[in-house]
Length: 474
Image (cartoon, rainbow, N blue to C red; front, side, top):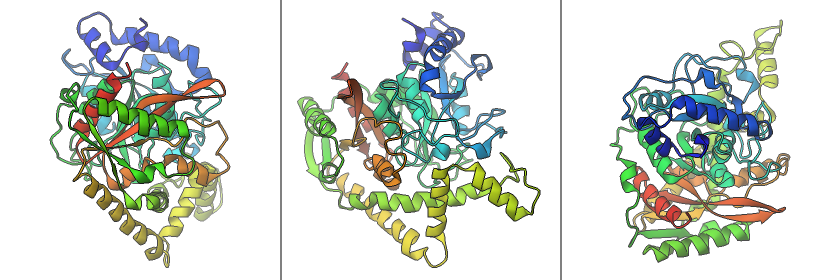
């Protein structure tokens, strides 16, 4: 088998045994990228000869395994743009904490993957580099904002990749591309070196081919970090130890509100609510209907909170300190206006305007403060449900991958693509997307993903049930 088709777990074992080397893997990946990526465009940069590695023991958990990186995670002395013109020619002066942890674990850092500009999107169409395409149907989107990371894992042009998730940006593209993606508990993984979108929502996580690789990578990435005041000093278990555990007696909540949404594909509903639930019950789990009554407000809350934080975080991109600068010879205000006006794309400007308005004098209480109060209610809904069940089962996305350009002119319709994933970010809980079926559209088989959610810092439970479900499909 071509090395690019193997999992991270398998390749680490092979490298330790001397059966292959990281150079062998990179050569196979380079061939795969050359053959496929000109049509998929998952990468914004790839150079196997410039991979980054560190000398470590052969016992390192990711020994010799190449990992691709989303273009909003800092790697020292490497260009990083967040898919935006305004960061053109910016080179990171340091490594993100997750990069340091990958290197210490024996991983090889290579390639930067495409993304929606500053992670603003659900389709990977807003990038300055142009759209990424879904490997299952090149006329459709891979999801976003971590579309490049999901697409390269699905296309077997990467072994695994890092993404970031603010409202579903790991899980939704994982669902649309048919791979595994986990958003850890807020604070479980350091955000140091992640260029911020919304600081109270962002989390870094892996996109992988299977649940075992997801558990392997998260064990490496997780843990407190003194450089990130929001990271949590909570013990990190060996997530691999949860794989293979019996799920008999596990209680699974199915929220009724998630299946009353307009736009939910009948095929998605059947794959999740009927088929997946039956599979889990056959393994001894118990499914019961639960209620998350404030679910209806999640989209509205998110699109006040996230743009407000984005407006604040993106204020630093002004053409003065780093990145692209408009060649204006006028005054400072003109420099700011022209740099930001031409440096940001339309979706970035839309969200900055939304956020600035929500935070402005006279509107702060009516919008941002009220949204934060409802956010608390959403979290309380989850707290109550987790007193009764171990995990929650929902669709990841209301539909399989949609066509390129289909929602580009309708922002609200695009925002609704994340209707099932946003609540987990608002509540700060972990959630994982796992493939669970397919729907045929235009003669192409398009992946469907299901989502499991658990209480804070209970990622082990997610891996336990996700692996049990995955085992029924292999």
